[in-house]
Image (tube, rainbow, N blue to C red):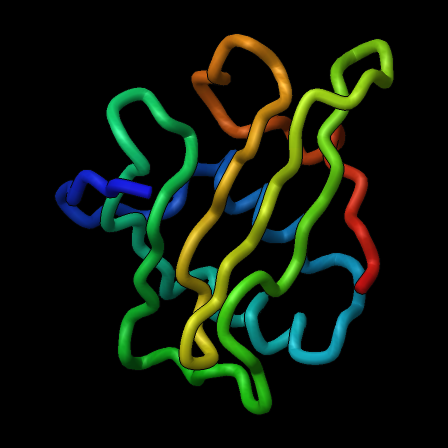
Length: 124
């Protein structure tokens, strides 16, 4: 994965919705990560036109305790007809949200993250 740094910015409404949806499974630590959302900035994209982004949490936010690095949550993404089209993945590092990935199964790369209603959170 090659990232392209950008001027840090707040999460969009869609990005915030995807993160919130992925944290809705009730997994241990999810509430701690939810409390970081107001402190999250998008700091890089995963290439030109990619909906996947790197995140940075401001130092004033409390890190999640007992969290391991890597994938914290994921969900299957379907199209309007219910056919699988991809997967949304939430990455964490050092107790902080660190990335939103949209892995797609289609031939054409999506230009945006999926609507949260199209994500079925996978319970770990």
